[in-house]
Image (cartoon, rainbow, N blue to C red; front, side, top):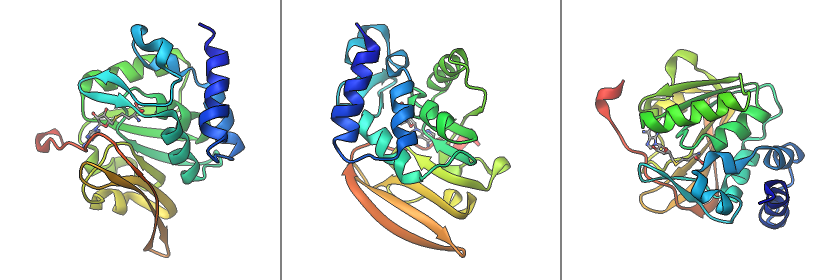
Length: 211
Ligand code: SAH
């Protein structure tokens, strides 16, 4: 398998052709070896146009969804970002390429540990990992310049709104079963809401005894 060729084709056929134009997002998608974030027997499918299982009933998001959500965050490289739902760590790697610091929270310990291992191996040093319920964000390091949520709550968690800095964007799929990709921007302390496409993420689960 020539993964570099598959990755180029993925970017051309799934990302650029669907309208993603942020050059930094495109180069991060060209760089990060997505096949290393799935199990060996799934590597041949890693660059296909769909999510894949990563164990524990969870999935690595479809490449286009990763690119779209990242583009919506409008990162320029100076940001401190919060990610809820580390999962495979693939989206985390894309964020680590494009922001200054990434704080990532995952509720399932084994997934967080796997993601940490691969991201360390790939040399990322600007990521902090936390195992816990991301509904509560990560108060200790707030405020964040931008926040991305890659699991679907039925409502926007208030702690995430509180931890979003002035001028920041919260990109989050909202809804039960199917969601609307929603962008909340904090301007003068008020939230401005815009909606993007319909999407389907695994639900945001809650473990009240975690925090
Ligand atoms: N961006 C990831 C998506 C993984 S799927 C990737 O592309 O690999 C969503 C992840 O959110 C799952 O790993 C799931 O365990 C996690 N999750 C669900 N509810 C959560 C919560 N309350 N806090 C933190 N993570 C949560």
